[in-house]
Image (cartoon, rainbow, N blue to C red; front, side, top):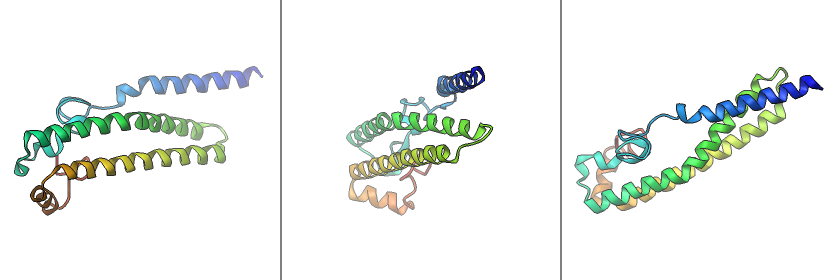
Length: 152
């Protein structure tokens, strides 16, 4: 009984440690940090000189970036936590397949939510552009419609 209680307390302590150090490993966003210049993923389209974005377009895109970051942060945090939980399940002496499958299903659902929000964000940003600017972005290969691409 004491060993079981000690094991549970140890696992809870490890989970608490993982959750508490998460911000230290979260990484920076763009040049200004997570919510600095250009939002969490760098300057994005706003730094692409060929688009000749108006000040209004830049403001709208930055507002969309900030909104996207606010909406996705809780999901990302939960995904990070579930990933830690999954690692702990695999580290058990006798991993429980049902528990692992359940946590994996939860992480897939969280990733799907993030992907859906990213798609909606990309379309919202795309809709801020004029038809000529859209053509330019598409001519550039459509790269930049995701966070680590040419819009950076």
